[in-house]
Length: 151
Length: 411
Image 1 (cartoon, each protein chain N blue to C red):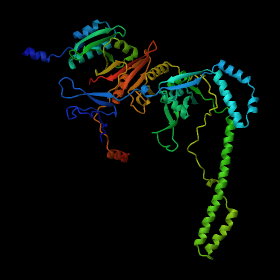
Image 2 (cartoon, chains in turn blue, red):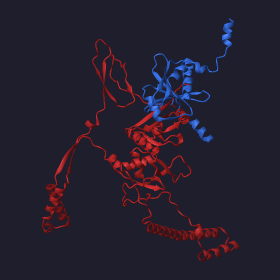
Image 3 (cartoon, rainbow over the protein chains, first blue to last red):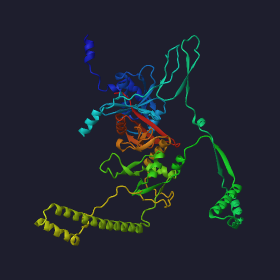
Image 4 (cartoon, rainbow over the protein chains, first blue to last red):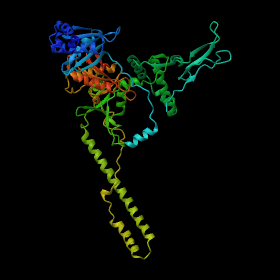
């Protein structure tokens, strides 16, 4: 029992990220940009622990020299590629095309300095936006008159 | 009030013994003709054959036979020879009146034409509307340059440009409603990409500057104007004197005869003829709100061709913008400038008067690097206004690559 409470009270070591097995895996991919690896790790943790995505794995992109993540949202869902980037990093359309050329739907994830994550979906081609959702009600004559008077 | 489309019934025949139990409704009038057929198998409902009532226009129109002459150069030479060898005096002596003479000569000429010029007969299966499309695409619009802004002034130019799918932006105020921004009038400002596209199609040319012989014309116009003003002044002063006299007379009528006021009025009336002056400042000037045809470009002026001043903006971004513009226009989209949304173009699936924009196009070259924050900002804006942000770059093989940015839905 004291061991259990000991286990509860013992805080994680300050460099727990560096010792995490997933981080070690990413380090082994030999990407020089350590900031990007750190960003990739944060996205990994978010996908695995918070959003519970399945089969999250990391892979190196040779053209861009970054760590990419591949994951499925649910069992049986299609594989998606996630590009984690620190938010102040510049990005070119060419790099986006390289990731899209892998053939999977792509998510760009911007990692802020406070570890906030913003995901943006990127698709090849022209995707028509969703039409505005109904139900629509024709504004009656009273409304129009009211609006005109307000003006 | 909800508007429901009006539905029309098509099945008017009995479908089960004495009743009509099966129905078919559409919103299109006279779409089908319903014919009952024998029932299938043991079914107690008859089978209904809905025959579409549409017949192809091709089959509806009667073929038309058209004959036309082929005016080749040999034919012209033949005709020339034929007419040269005619003795025209014969006609003069043979006919008695001018009408007969004209009749004879013209029928002889027609006869020669029939002999010398071959004709061609064709059968037209479908009457096409008069070549309006062709005319529009052949029409060369006259672009006036105001500094470096390309402007179109004439209505037929605006119409031609719109029919080619280019929208532009109206800049001028309307003479009857000047103090508003909602509806604007001519001139039409073209985007640099639109101007370039028109130039490439040889559908636009610069108008020669107005000042070439403008001095003389302008002087004439000024003289004309002054003459008009002088005439107007004369007419108005006559009318003013009349007006004054009748006012004084009315005053005299209403006052007592012989009183002081009456005397004063009469003396004023007599003095009127000598001393009345109609000051220039009291002149009523008519301002015409509609000019009869904007005579910036008389039809007789010859257009300059393809000698464009290249207005120096040859940067990479401009080129990228133009490639994207041409590609999207080629796919049938309409494009306007997207200043309000921070992009380069707004892309409409059809005429902007009928549709909302679907895309905000941001043009950049493939290698150009953008700040990630800018990408997020423009994507966020796009999702707020229900438009997809398109990153467009001209690729290596002349195609344009498009990437759509959408909100991921992951909060």
